[in-house]
Image (tube, rainbow, N blue to C red):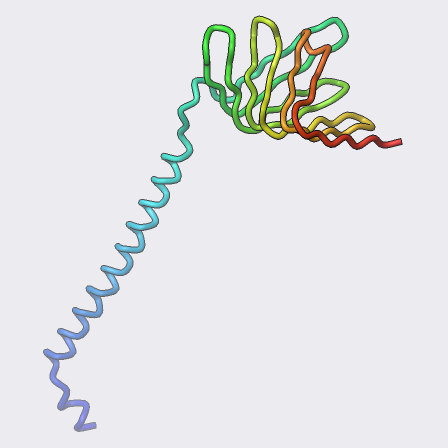
Amino acid sequence: MNSLLLINRKLILYFSAILFTFFLFFFFFKYFLTFERDNKLEINLISNADVSEPKFSINNSNQKIFVTAQEGNFLDNENILLNKKVLFESNKFTIETEKVIFNRKNQSAESKSISVFKSDKTRISSEGFNIYDKGNKIIFLGYSKVVLKW
C-alpha cells in the first residue's frame, strides 16, 4: 500500500493528459478522413452529362421502341451520345449496351460497344449495332454470337 502512495501525482496527471490528447487526435483524424472520403464520393457522383436519365422513343407502324440511359450529351442538334446502361426496349425485344449515338431526326441509333439483344427465343451478343428505318431494321456489327432456342 505504501508503494502506491509513493507514485508521483504529477507524473500520473501528465501521463493522463498525453493519453487523452492522443485519443482526441486519433478520433478527430479518423473523423476527418471519413469526412474527406465521403466528400470525394459526392464529387464523383456529379458527372459532365448534359441530360440526366434521358428517355426517347422510336415510333414505327409495328411497334414503339423506348430508349433510356443514365446520361446523355448533345453532339449537335440531331445527335445525342447516350452513356451508361443504355436500354432499347419494345414488346418484342430488348438491347442493352453502354454507349449509343441516337439520331432524333431519323430515329436511328448506332453503337460500337458490346451489345446484347434479347427476345423470346433469341439472344445475340455483338460488338455493336445499327438501328435504322425507324426501328424496323437492326444490323449487328463486328463479332456476333447468336443463340437460338427451340
